[in-house]
Amino acid sequence: MNPKKKHHLQNFIIILYFGLYLTIGLSLLIKQPFGNPPDEYNRFLIPQYIAENGTLPNGYDESIRIGGYGFSYAFQPILPYMFQGYTMMFVKVFTDSEQALLYTARGVNLFFGLCTAWLVLLLSKKWFHDRRLRWCFAFLATFLPQSIFVHTYVNTDSCCLLSIAIILYGLTLGLEDGFSCGSSILLSAGIILCSLSYYNAYGYILSCMLLFTAFFLSGRPGQIRFDLRSFLKKGSFIAILVLLGIGWWFIRSAILYDGDFLGLYTRNECASLYAIPEFHPDTRVTWQNQGHSLWNMITDSDFWTLSIMSFIGVYGPMTITTSVWVYRFYKALFLLGAVFCALIPHGRTRSGGLYSERKGFRIFYHLNMLFCVLMPLLLSLVYSYSTDYQPQGRYLLPALLPVCYYTFHGLEKAWGLCPIASEKKNTVFTCFSVILCGFMILLLMLTVYGYAFPYYEANPIAP
Image 1 (tube, rainbow, N blue to C red):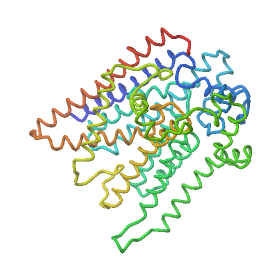
Image 2: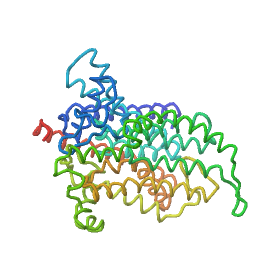
Image 3: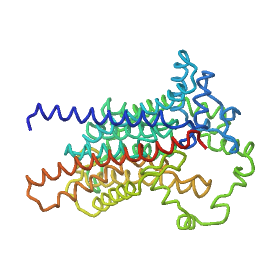
Image 4: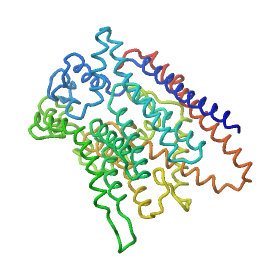
């Protein structure tokens, strides 16, 4: 293909990619009734408080406590709510419309989603050589129905996904350039956003620390060398940036909550003081306090069904499901990708954007990514078992980018075994990639316009 035409085609695809994202995202943002997405009403209390008072709330503040449960979300990191609240404060200069303020708060998350989509494109260029695989990966990570939904209402999950994309991109660049100043700053920014948005994604912070340390190890067994000077120099730079970015929040929490810098113990204490008996931590009915084992919960409940379905796409207050064929398609895609990735050998495995000749480091890298996939799942299991949180796919979304990577890495390896002549194989693969990306868009539009919008029309007020 002519380089000029190729350039124009690429620009067209990029415009289409972001145009579709904004069109569908804005449609969802505006169409959803207030409070219809999961727990939006209670989350919106915090940016609303910030917009009205210009200060951060104490977790005990009665105006932001969740009715019945007796605690508030202000005990946990609230950086995304701060972005929303102060943006709402600016908008209030021009209008007091409640609808405009709600759309402003939601719009901040849509902007986070747009930034995430952009970073996913950048990551795809590092993680895949083939441009067709890049687009398949980007479309899957961005246009999975649940992925775009989480960026259209008030929550902290949206900022969390952005932070993960920044962390992975910063880590990828760092492994390529030896953690230069630029990649270290980017990695630090991702860690700061992650630390101040969502505890479920902290596995990425731990993995970054481990991979950063392992990067400075070299040599053969019995002759291991550790570049302590570079480790301390570059590690100190990242650590200082991160501590400057997050220290204020944890110091504030320690001061407000008698040393409880994470706020988790104090949140439970608050619930013990103000929760009604039905939701009191000591009397609330859970699988654990009924004497059931974790295995009982896994086998006797709908944990797996709800988790998998809502990871793919369940809208509204966990009530709006889409076509059964949407779930079947994505289940098959993820399963086939995982099986091919695990079973088909590959001579030189791409580890986070570079070919590493150090086999031990490659293995360690993938073990860390596997940990980042499994940690949200394990936390979701604990929540459902010990505190009776409803299984929701948004708890698992921190695993999205590694899952999408391994899905298409597996399909890439499987395609490499396909016994077709090279020229014909290239054409077939191009057609397959275009059809696959188009099909993912059609499934998203079916979910949004065929299932979600009719529900919103029939239920204009959240239950």
